[in-house]
Image (cartoon, rainbow over all chains, first blue to last red):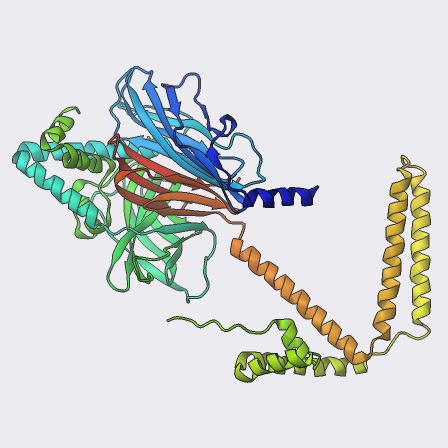
Length: 372
Length: 221
């Protein structure tokens, strides 16, 4: 029986299997009955499946049309994508931020998903799409929040408000020409920012060729940050950085329940880049100190043509959530520091506004700013 | 610096060469490699030393305890098996009777097992000491090699999940299966990684102008 299955799989692997997805292979979209968004339509136009050796590659291209059925403006939405049969521990999400969708208005959501699974895997519905959360303009939230999307979207919304306020003040103080300069600088910065591929593996080292050394963090202290990074170190070996340990102190007068420390890596030949972030959920009373430890490894396959050799690292507090749910993010002034400016990406909103300027011009950008 | 990869003979061939048990052609071929390879030469030297030590140890060991012969050992094993079978049948009377063909199958298997054991013992005792040592060493080496390979394989795949991010998309890999979120036509992308096991890529969709952030997460079940 088993050998016949193996034989069947082998034969199937040799036969080119390409085609559109059957109805049973299409994603199952399920929103709660009291959801503030309705699914109007789902188009899977170019979705297909094909055999790759002993595996089946499922390519989903879903264009969803959703409608805001609530009475408030929607600022962000997160859809949860899971494939329980394929990756039981793995999940995906698609988040739209910087939205401005009024009641009864519709908006598109695009999901481009690829699944690779054995040919002999179960033939049930491979993908489920659900709602993880919706953020409204009054910062209220709806949804199960399994992926902490409330916090993610609220942080993006705070950044969006900060940046819109900044660009509006630039426009008011320096006129359209100053705003144009700001947009050109933003686009240049975005193009020049170093980026690289990165893997994160939970647990120990992924390689054992290079000797490992313990490297101390240096910290970039932002003036009004409620968290003071006291000490920190991580283990570095060649192109891997792992097991960061940080010690932080709450210097505000409110309890803190979440913080995120950005992690900048410096390479031997002087290049630097934002490697990732070390998030921590904790309960830190005013004046209290706490340790953060993550047993994970960051691995950077290659930076351009040369292998990466990490030499030193810098940490900075990139966001904080207080126990009352309010948030702290760095100011535009903080982000203007040369070291951060070299590595930090512009916010979601700044990137969106810069693309409006690039594609539609200055007047369209000013009109967009005036909507808020 | 590039590392040159030299194809070494299989470990079993090295072991056979060390024991002088390779065929003429194979012996010439492997010896030719060993003459130029310090690593394999060292391996052969180590095997020969281990062989000498084993022979010395074997010489010090008594053949069998007093009063025991292989025939008697064989009879005792067969007797024990018969007692076991009789006990099994007696207990089976209190259980739901199994289909006759199943009982016959198990009995046959036990008889074959017992016969195999007797044959293996007889074969082992009939081997000349040097051949027996060599066979033992080879089996041990093969076993070590197999277990070593298994451990290496488990470590390499690690049964661990890897979350990856690149400007073209993000993916979570788990036991050879992959879930990827791809990035459609977009204007610029920003990759982000969280040490808690998530990867994200943010982009402005070229068609809709919407800021979209795709993320993949891994959380143990």
